Length: 487
Image 1 (cartoon, one colour):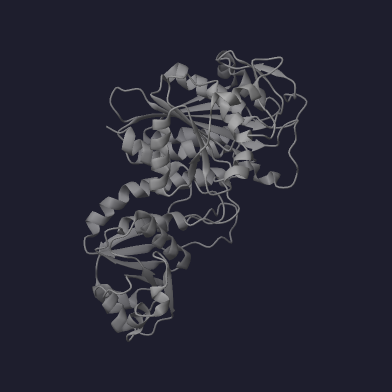
Image 2: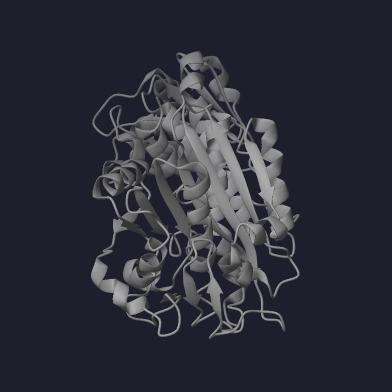
């Protein structure tokens, strides 16, 4: 997988600043005096830094943004980056500052004069996230040099940064999975990558098609029956807590989605490699939990399929029987993700009796129409549980917005021939998809469904990610688990 940027933490050494190459970063606050490290840089630059701090341009900067002093006289560095960062700032501002630093980095890396800034660990986290580069298939992708944080107490800073480094690795794992093309990330390759996490302490089980047939997962199997890639369900268990039931995380893992017989338009279909984004997020969370040795019991279950048109593929009008025994009329074979999730949600309840469940899926284009690329849509049968999830998303700066799931929508998915149908057309498309999933969740189990279709692969870069997959949800779910499920 893509390794996060090499970041180290060392004791402040002002004499070494003059010879530092690449980018030298100074934190400053408009209207306040420079710290010791800033004053050292100011002397080296013959007062240029102080003039910059006192300038109107610096005063107008948003916190977390920076002024650039190119090729500073008196220093070996190519750039001094003057970052507007108050001594007391929000986590989001510190992470933004880190992202600002990452955008300025080059092959020579950099030196961050953190001194005793209280949010330096969060700065390092934002830097790591924004410095992500997926360069497995192109020799031209530029690499970043290492970054050193000079701090007054580097041991303490390194300790604060350690769990954040585990979180960054989880986010990177998710981004890598979403980035991989479908000819490489087949269902078998995906399962193998998850099985490899056993070396981190996860218990991983792979259910093959024969197992799924025995379990009655005919809704899931129907989605993949037109593909050469075998359908699979992968179960990842992290047992770090006491003897309590686990939290279950369920992910949609459609490694490529043509739409099946209900074929999608050709334009933009190449992005359907991201239709396994929910499974990717679950995998990233499980990796994070193992790396930081979370004191919680969590099971991550992902359904891995490929939706292809073929002589064996399911057709519009087919009726399939789910593992729950509910019959489903297939109106649209492009509404396949809910068929996968239906069987996996039921399996999670039957086999693990979870204390709560969360599923994530790039489920509908309708959620993008409603919320754009800034927010995931959140549906739930439990307001308190949804509130905890939304709070965690706000704390981590990941956009999420609650959407309704009231009983009146049930009539829209009633089928003339089966118990329910898998598509109700365009009106309230994201809501009817969630309503479909609700049929496979026991009312007494707190459950949230998160439609991440708009946030998994937005069309432009975001504050903490270059253009491409964001890894949305890894930070939110890690926060939720830390706050609500760890003993």
